Image (cartoon, rainbow, N blue to C red; front, top):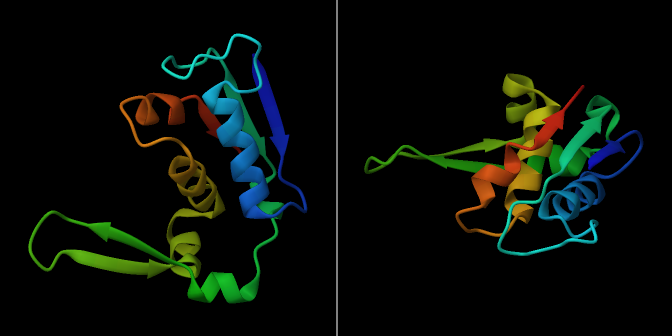
Amino acid sequence: MKFIIDATNMNLGRVASEAAKALLGKLSPTFQKNKVADVSVEVINVSKINLSEKKLKSKQYSSYSGYPGGLSFASMEAVIAKKGVSEIVRRSIYKMLPKNKLQARRIKLLKIKE
């Protein structure tokens, strides 16, 4: 099955939760929680998504290099400037998926278009 989500004038969380549900396979009649669903999810028009100014400055993304003292933080504004809005959408959908062996396989079924 193919799902297309139009992100025009939608909030980030609403888009991410719809996409996460579709990636889990909860919208298909043959849902099994221990299997990767045979779906593809495409999120379009992510550049037109609603992002508040407060969230752009206050939301922090962390990354850890694996070395002592290697924890670094970047604001949402900095991540958008460096990698684009599609990275913000991908990260929010990734965090909404269950934290198990299937998480990485499910996120590969996601396509994001500006």
